[in-house]
Amino acid sequence: MTSSRGKFYIDYVLAKVCSGTTIGLDGVLIEVEVDVAGKGFPTFSIVGLPSKSIDEAKDRVRAAIENVGFEMPDSRLTINLAPADIPKEGSRFDLPIAIGILAASGSVQKEHLTKSLFLGELSLEGKVRRVPGVISIALLAKKLKYKDLYIPLESAKEASLVDGLHIYPVENLSDLILHLNGYKEIAQQIKLSWEHLAKESTYEFDFSEIKGQIQAKRALEIAASGFHNLLLKGPPGAGKTMLSRAFPSVLPRMDRDEMLEVSKIYSVSGLLEDTFFMTARPFRSPHHTTSRIGLIGGGTIPKPGEISLAHRGVLFLDELPEFSRSVLEALRQPLEDGKVSISRASGSLTFPSRFLLLAASNPCPCGNLGNPKKPCHCLPGGILKYRKRLSGPLLDRIDLHVDVPPVREESLNLYKESEPSAKVRERVEVARQRQQTRFKNSSVKTNGEMSSSQIKKYCQFSKEAIDFLKQAISRLSLSARSYFKIIKVAQTIADLNDRNKIEAVFVSEALQYRLKEE
Image 1 (cartoon, one colour):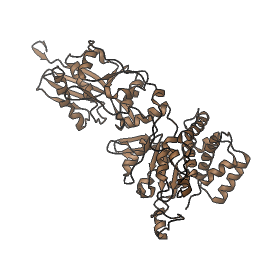
Image 2 (cartoon, helix red, strand yellow; image 1 turned 180 degrees about the vertical axis):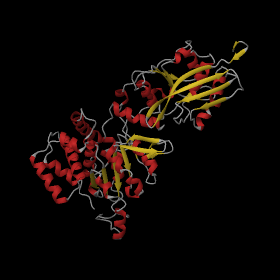
Image 3 (cartoon, helix red, strand yellow; image 1 turned 120 degrees about the vertical axis):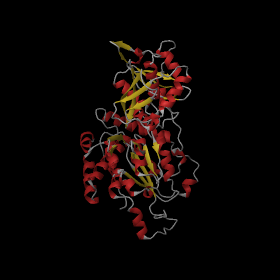
Image 4 (cartoon, helix red, strand yellow; image 1 turned 90 degrees about the vertical axis):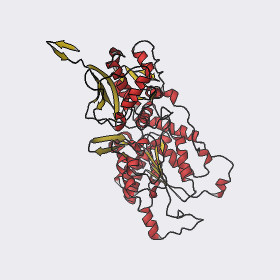
């Protein structure tokens, strides 16, 4: 308190600590401003559009500071989360608020707060707990050229893939105070290379366990190689679900960019748990009662849905016609664009959704239509109604349509195992390597992602293939989308056969997967 000519002026102590939040999948810088006033009743207020969980931080922070041996200022405290027009939620601001209060009261040296970001939830005893979205905040810190990132010990490995940062895993508040004051240094998190993380995964099923179904396995190999959507249709017990569950075992490993991209989605959604990274391609299998918001994403503050959680992986929809029609129709645009935009009154957010749609369906309500050994008891009207649950535009977006017949007795009795998934995956990775070389100067990664202009640029045809394709389009009256999808699948088949040009035999095989029942 100072005086001049009999008047008294109150000294205000200010401190600023930088933190971050996530909007969609992107990190946004948040400045935690702390004002400790020297006059007024002791109060503790937080402003800047905080949620209920942030408002409750007052009690967590107060207890944590006192339980690690420090005192809360006995005066009016005002915490401002700037910019004030961005809604904030979660418990991630506990740690920066506590450090700001301690810095304003003189318990922490302020000079160590510059070019540092703080993130974490506090327990009542001062331990720092895990929070979601750490990868997005680490990428934000790197973009804004912050040097130091202080995050919970449980979340430190998530940020270790981001280069150019000093990552300090904080176990409790007292350790951080000693570190900032220069008494006891916290060891930096060891950087982990993505090659070290990309280990061999274990799978629920292997192709060697599946008897027969040669055509279905071939279609799955093509789908994995070129990232093509696939529909399996057949009677109950034919092996549709088992084939689908074995599909991840033939998918190629993710590269560093894909691993970071997918891990960021799961980090924001709070689904990483103890894995720290997504090292295997996602395989999401939502139940047919899933709502449109659950599948596409949304909410008051939009969160990623199943299609975004399946990004760079597989979205498996078992019993496809049992899904609500409005839910399935919402898939049409993300299947084409590889992203989904969710609009709310406060703004619009875009989530990536470049997923491979793998679906399974029965041919009729009882499932025995076309089964040579079991009669179908469905009426024609019931079969028609069942098929109409799937719209033509949605089916047209599926590249490969495969019938899965009942397994023959002689196939079930064979002692010889089928080809294992490891050998199939070797061929898939070779085909993916050809695509990686082809698209090295492009934004796409696989044949299934090509646009019409990219097809014209990258695909080469033999004369016989062009003539055969023209005849097929003319006789079968296929749509323009079907025309381009046939070319994409034929290009993938050419890659599997190590050919530079698309030949007529490749077009013929691709064409048979488009001949679906109308």
